[in-house]
Every structure is written in structure tokens, then in C-alpha cells.
View 1 (cartoon, rainbow, N blue to C red):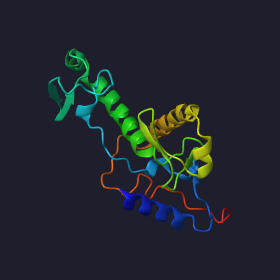
View 2: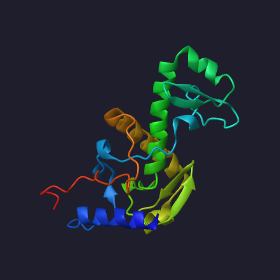
View 3: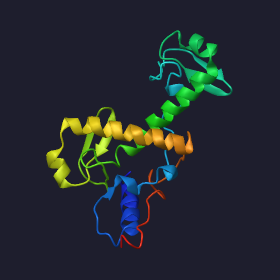
View 4: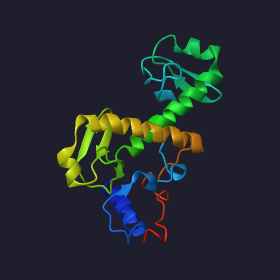
Amino acid sequence: MPWRRLIFTLSLLLAFSSAARAQLPADAVMLDKVKIAEKQKAIDLCPVYLKPSNPKLPTWEYKGVKYRGSKPDAKAKFLKNPKKYVKAAEKQRFINNFMQSMSIIWCPVTDEISPGGMTRWEKLGYTWESCCAFCDETVKDEDFDVAVKKLRERAEKTYELIGAKYTEGAKSPVEGAIKQPTAEAK
């Protein structure tokens, strides 16, 4: 994991070497090029209630994909309208995976891209990382509520752009997704 952060930091430094910044604005990330890992699989999210599945409940299969419900009645409800539930679960899983992958990159205080190596917080089910010492000292609980909302908006936008496209083995979720500075910005 530390080598991934080092590679990510070096790629950011190379991409923006002329702009001596420790962090980047949120719009520096091209959402249609992010690399999201599929950590939450279909079996891990109830397609009916869109909540984590209950490992004590049996699984079922639909079109080669295994699902599991969060409540005993989930399978019966699912089978009444599988297309509806498959699509909703696909979108929610992508949003969940996006938010898990990207929360550590976006500073919840400034909404800027963190170069890594700063203070980490476990809040609202996500791991966050500050982008600078100022954020370490000024962070408030309310910052995380706002950050979750912004991150969810980005996740939904990304889903609109690329669908439920996953990339396994990427060094960083923003590898190849950082806008290069224009001549005017240099």
C-alpha cells in the first residue's frame, strides 16, 4: 500500500511539476477516466433493498450472477422484476465502490485531491485523508457530511459517463485521469 501512495504522489508531481502544488482542485480529475476497483460484488449487496447482503441467507443466480438478499423476502421480490433490481443494484454497487476508492483521495475539508501521507480519518463508513496540515487542524464533523454528498454526486456522474466499468490492479483510482495543465496554466 505505501508504494501505491508513492507512485500516486510521484505521478501527480510529474503531471503538475510546473505548478508547485501539494494538492489539486477536484475538477482536475477526469471522471470518465477513473479506475475503480470492484470491491463490493453482486453477492455483497442485496439487489432489492440496496443494503449489504446477509451472509446467513442463501444465494440465488440470475443470468450467471450470484445474488444474496439482506432480508428473507428479497429473492421473491427480486424474481418479480429482476431487470429493475439488477439495474438498480449495478448502479448502487458502482457508487459504493467509487466512494470507497475515492474517499481517501478527496480531502473532506477543502475538496481538493490529496497527495497522500497526511492525517487519515475513518468517518461515515469511509477512509478520508487530509491534503495539508491546515485541514488536520480545522476539520469538523460537518465536513464529512458535505464530503459524502459531493463524493456521491461525483459517483453518480461517473456512472452516467462510464456505467459500471471496473479496473482491477490500477495503482491509483486517478491513474491516467488527471488533466494535464494547459499552456495558460503553466
